[in-house]
Amino acid sequence: MLAAALEKTCVLTDGAAFAEKEIPYEGGSVRVFIETLFPPLPLVIFGAGPDALPLVDAAKFLGWHVSVVDSRPAYATKAHAANADAVILADPERVRECVNLSRRHVAVIMTHNFDKDKKLLQILLESPCQYVGLLGPTSKFQTLVENLEREGFTLNKEQRGRLHAPIGLDIGAETPEEIAFSIISEIKAVLEHRAGGFLRDRTGPIH
Picture 1 (cartoon, rainbow, N blue to C red):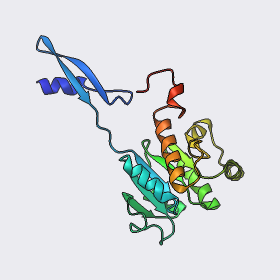
Picture 2: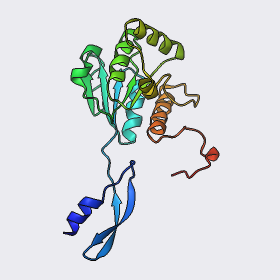
Picture 3: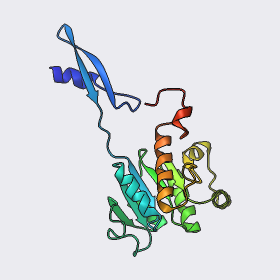
Picture 4: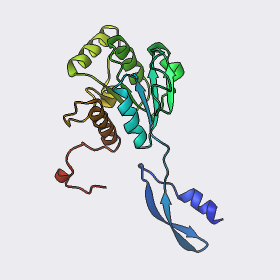
């Protein structure tokens, strides 16, 4: 009976991980401590070049579930991306059938191929992914958008809100490892609705 009462009332909202609740029970009450265990964050990295591997490692260090997708047989192997949870060989045209993208997914495009980036950008923005990041300079992103618009695909406000291009926080990253931490930090900041600034400048509580 107590288990049934807990099942009905012990529901956390707004992404809360911990809470205390007073549960009515047989004329009195029971105070319970609740811990919510969320499944690993699913990250999909499109492109398995040398700069993608540090991103795989950084995400796995945080306990995320990492999938790597590449259209090149030499790169889309478990031997190449050893720390990834899944390695998928697929052209952009086959992404919809090979990768099940949900609202929990975050995706990063780093193929270094303009045409592939363009196709993937449209596919990911049409998907429910909560975060889409594109590696490369602002000029490349603007050209991609212009090309997509000429082909009949125009980004709406909601899609622009989920898109981060250029990807990453401005920390002066140069090496693949530094860029990986810049990307990971931005994803974390976005998911936690933080600006990614200095904690010393934060007026509210840190946690």
